[in-house]
Image (cartoon, rainbow, N blue to C red):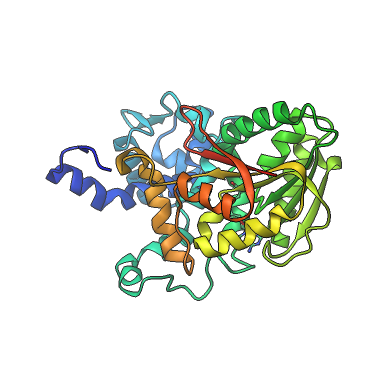
Length: 341
Ligand SMILES: C[S@@+](CC[C@H](N)C(=O)[O-])C[C@H]1O[C@@H](n2cnc3c(N)ncnc32)[C@H](O)[C@@H]1O
């Protein structure tokens, strides 16, 4: 399953080799709040250095590099924000997305991938503390900042779940590995009957709780801290959501978990696996999923992204029927659903 990709030439290879410099340029500017400093009025480097309390020479070099990257405009020695930057990178904007850098451009991801060649030699994570650890700080950052990127997928899941649940007498939702919790909270926003149970590590649930309160659904949410493979699931559910969770584990463990969860479904209830998959489209169409797969290789023992077809098999092996795969154009996620029979 392959299709012609962009031509390989020196320019493209050089772009890949130097991509990390752009990453750190953007991350530094976000961390220093360069875009906030320029949001009020045009400034020269000394003004910006005074606002940010940074070194003037270093600030001049940084501002010029940001201009070269298209993130600032320069007129004489005055710097301003071009279109789009004010909306996306000034912290007071409702569309601000700079926080994602603390996840996508994090030291955690860099540390995991910096010795990828060693990981490939060895076959598995080389990190002492990795994504499977209960206290992996990355997951708190992920839950804090990844709401922006997840909202459209959560909206899609909520629409289909609320429509499906109309004829049911209840809508009790268990969100396993909930992170920020948006998958469950979007359902709660879409149906006032919905009661959501969030399952994740304790420090991640603290973040989910803040999102639930901010979204006004906090009173219909409860929290189950602990390991999804072991914690008491405490009740029966109409819908159990696994959002971007199962790719941290090999197929054998996925079947073990889905079986355990299927045992907690109410009659006619469903398990929904939502998230990135690989294997059903040419790799070039799923570039980000394949990069994510490298991360799973580098920071789990046996995790990897599974194909929709493999998820069908996992749901069937857990005794679920009526398996369906859904996607919406423009969304990177697939939704694979199985129902208790
Ligand atoms: C990639 S995030 C997914 C978050 C959210 N569901 C989403 O789709 O954006 C994976 C989440 O699973 C949690 N997690 C990983 N292993 C876990 C385990 N064994 N038990 C409970 N939660 C776990 C992490 O803390 C993290 O919040």
